[in-house]
Length: 51
Image 1 (tube, helix red, strand yellow):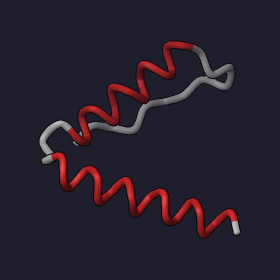
Image 2 (cartoon, helix red, strand yellow; image 1 turned 120 degrees about the vertical axis):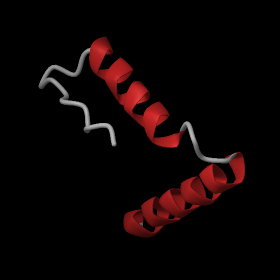
Image 3 (tube, rainbow, N blue to C red; image 1 turned 90 degrees about the horizontal axis):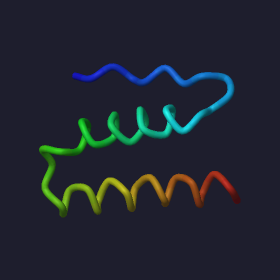
């Protein structure tokens, strides 16, 4: 498994690239339907947390 990226305190463009690469590596082998289910779960948690 790929390690979580280390983000600099200044949050640069390079950090964004690291995050995108990290998420790509996590999800590249998953089928599209599973990705949709996971994103719905994440969004639902965010909505409930903001209430």
